[in-house]
Length: 295
Ligand SMILES: [Fe+2]
Image: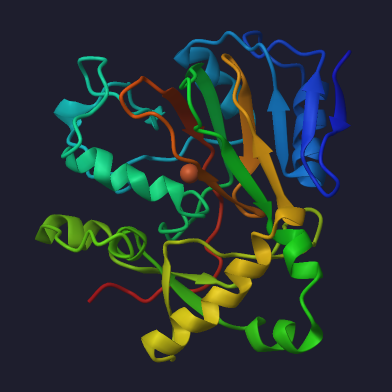
């Protein structure tokens, strides 16, 4: 096995070499990548010319793919990619950038807010894997914030304050913060808030991290304004430059990250030009806390 990983940021992020993601992985390679994820939480692979099928096959080494239903307002007839692929491009089925007033485009602008993928699901995602097929000519960097390092550097009083708090996450909270407040009854049911612990513990390493996301819009047993103000401080703390890695995309980069330990966001780009990014998502295996049963 010629795979090696080099840390490229002071606190996290590994750059992986010596592997071709288009080929099936050996057991040793899979184990090395999984161990790399536990340690670095973000792994960068360059020059990986993969098709959707190969991206899905690579992703399945780390667990079953997440069922994408409930994570978008796009109707199935509008979808550009097959089941199993999350379309995080700015493109419609015709391959052209979505028009300015497209509701899907406006909804997707929420990806510019710091978030953890699928924190709005009762069982939130494990890994996300993002493949750059067409890089936008201007901007579109993805930024990652290490929520373990952020947690470690909190003072003891703050750690005690947040230790047992449970947040409510919903796509309606993140989009609501951008002024998108109108949803159909079907969407409201689909985006019903779920509960997530604010501090979670990694199942392998035992490290604690902040589990923050723009989807978090309430805290159980706390008035909403108090909850939202309380959440601002750890969000500002966790996204300081010292905890953030900025990924400048090259064509055929693949970046995978652990949503249990990271937040991320995309930065502004030229929306008149294509940005074709395709994500696969490895499902998590357990909720972070008990859920309230639907009435
Ligand atoms: Fe995301």
